[in-house]
Length: 331
Image 1 (tube, rainbow, N blue to C red):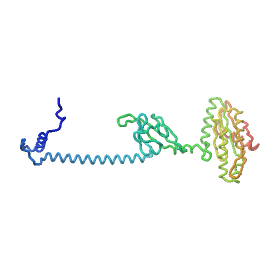
Image 2 (cartoon, rainbow, N blue to C red):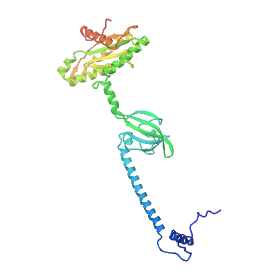
Image 3 (spheres, one colour):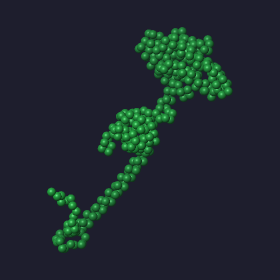
Image 4 (cartoon, rainbow, N blue to C red):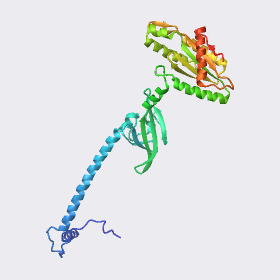
């Protein structure tokens, strides 16, 4: 069966349609041979309404286009990167911040092809850029885009947060843990020692005659010495030991699950490492360090302050005996 609407109107049909439109609403009986050319008020009203609707539609399109531009500006000015990718990680859209933060991001590219590939799974992924101390987090959440499932992703520069956290627990001069982190680690180590029955040791270290270095060579030279000593001490630790700058020219180390012989060996290595000549411009310095040791005893509970006090006293005793002799506490 032929669809009557699937063809163009004939000339005769078109003429008749015009006559009917012109006569609509006027009660005029028009025959095939009597076509009025007078304007039909109904048609005029319809055409006026159509024109108004058309202009209204055009205005709404202009408003929509302006809204889209405004949204685009807002998205590009965000401090966080945002975008959408499909299930395979191919990027469908991203704002300018995303491309600025994350090297290689571009519409049509895959996360796997970027400079820092990340797994395309829901949750937070932490990544580091090539620049020092640059850290990003990429968060994926399931979304729908263009009728298909994909992921909405957020990219945030967390460098400031990481640096702030680092500054709260690290000494800014030597980059070693500060006393806050040290006492946290010491407290945790003491609790573990009580539960496991193992022993823990504290090595309290002080650079001999450091004040004289500051007085003679200046504080800049003194800071350089502190950095060098910090690196040398750290180089002698076991992988699970921790050394911190407690303040001034004093350092402390916490060593868990360690025997008396191991503590003595670590202490000796530290003294030998620190004693190597230090070259500052045209000056060569000879350094020594006094080391005091305090240990926990099986079956004995120690508070962090108590064992640190014993280690400090042992260090002072070592300083009086000899600058390079490690003196254990008498407890």
